[in-house]
Image (tube, rainbow, N blue to C red):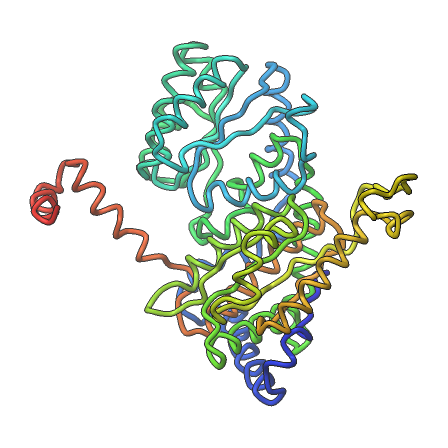
Length: 445
């Protein structure tokens, strides 16, 4: 179970004020649980850990096994936003840091496309595909979102030219709408295996749908443990209590923001495996809360590396931030520091100690220094970085996000601002139907 510790905020906040925000969080919990708030038609993610069946997981494993029998060693997962960040963060967290250099081939390597419009990236991706035995997972509700649609057009044409149309169809899986949209139409025409993006689950909450589970499974990771961890977290988080970790986190972060003017939350990790968990978290909270002129800006650092870069600003810069530290209780590998006869580096005082002990002391020392420097500290604690605990962590952040956004007074499940750049881009690209917009925007340039 994920635990939240807010003692690092005690010198900054009044106890009575904190209790008032706990009351707000409990009210927001009721809104989320009873599905009476804004965006309540996008709450399908709440029930996913209980609803995922063995049959669904077996279907994903069957895709993995089929492609491995074909000798597939590269899978291009095409998607943008939540359609790739959830899978990416799980894979990065569960991977050996040097798997590529060690050339481990227990499962296909999964790489990502459709999350940018860089011509160099796409060209270099195709260089890789040409050297590998390749398959593709394409993820898009509509099939017309520009970035993934461009990437899929290129990858699809490549697969058909290399393997033939029929074999290419057996190497493409679509995750899309159940009934409508360009990708659904194409999937039916080409007889692709397809899975459904649930109508009531938004992209940034979709890691426990086929959107996240299929790529994670194909990459060789334990999706059953991931789902089990999410279910375990769900059982605790759905209990209304002031000790509920989602209540504690949502209450404190909103207090720090609204009462102390802390406009930025920095998610801090001390394990590089969690770097992309922070990227996923930034989308989750940024897109859920950043609207109506409101929101806490989500940022992240990777310590101890960033203590030698961003550490100066956090310690002594503008007092605009608080930190949420991802604390991992224990490492899964062991490295002990040995004594050295010369002791030129003067580290013999660490002889016999584990490197992770040093890491934890750096973490604790940093938190104390930052408190002294005026930066409140929230700690989110997980036991170990494995599939079970990661499933719990992701579900915790999702559940807390819904509560937090309702305290803030925004709809957590829409993203109207995302459309603004698209309209301008389509006008500049002279998309049919945008003629007047094209004329107007060119007059501004």
